[in-house]
Image (cartoon, rainbow, N blue to C red; front, side, top):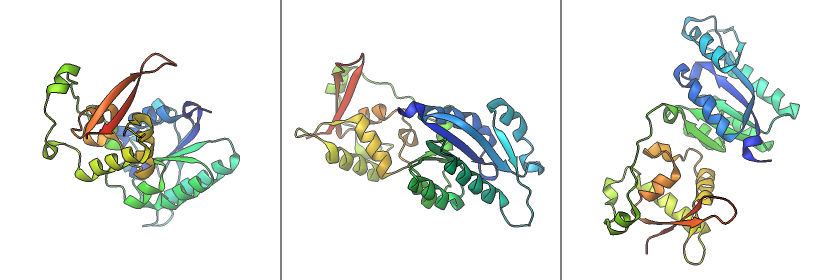
Length: 252
């Protein structure tokens, strides 16, 4: 089964997910599979959640009403966790998308992965690290807003060869991330140091679930690689289909 055929349950914590980003969330999850179950949890009788109605209708998301029985206790989390386990044992899904910035779902993400589910987390940049690393992949909601990614104009090949390497201190990418990318290339490189960019991207996410080229202003990993002064980029013809395969290696 290809990734596009994976069946996902999208479970949203209304108390910890911004309404404005819901459209972007649903478009993003479609990249990874089909959202066959779409539910959002919260006490929709409260004024702070009253604005969800129109957005939920536009995206065909089922609201699960959960009253706050006790002051200071978050019953929404419990309802979402119970539903997730029921859906897990239904045997009809391949993965879960948990939309929240709350670390209370860390154990849920871990348990779903233990059961063989693919788990994608989506939350704001304030999301605690334990929840991020408990997911197979974590996507920052801020990256889904229009205009988040900076457009980088690619230079012609001739100019690329003549242009001096960019000074590393001017790079928008932190040194720690550059080191991570470099180590990942070395992990899978062939004898000449070349590594397929698609495999690099997959391994980067396994090492660091919140790795996303959009974090650094690039829409695609290809653009990020092209703008790293420490990499050589090689475009090779794909013999099996139209298009090119992109390989990179550390500059020698």
